[in-house]
Length: 162
Image 1: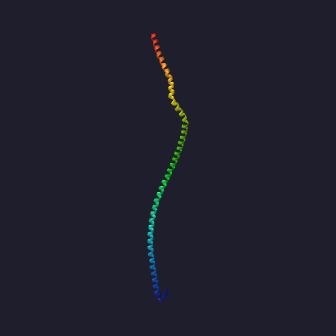
Image 2: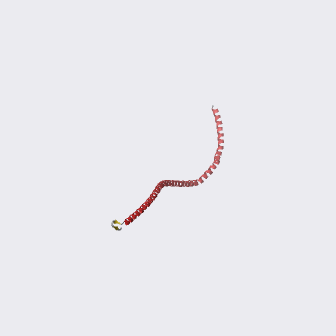
Image 3: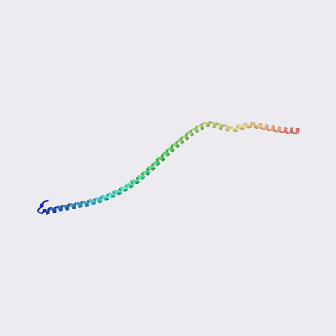
């Protein structure tokens, strides 16, 4: 700025003030633009915070669901272990029963000839009993007649003695 007789030149001071006013207007425009941008950013930040809160809630629910699933999975694994143990026990029992069945079948197979012989003898039993009793039948008849004769003779002897 140039100096005149009484100080700074009026045109230079006016130019300086005009430049200052222009810069103030520009600064005010930038401040308004910045305030608008700050308001937009605050709005975006608020929306982002809301989304974050919703996502945190969703993550919390998903974690609870995951914990629930993990718990059910653990219970399922325990139950599956119990089922496997029971299946092994039943398989062992089935093997023991099969072994027992094979032993019984072997014993039964070994007994078949004896049972067949027993049946054959049992079928012959009535015939043998008849044969045995038929010999006695004749002897019983003769014994009966002897007893009757003894009774008659004894009855006569009693009358003779008496």
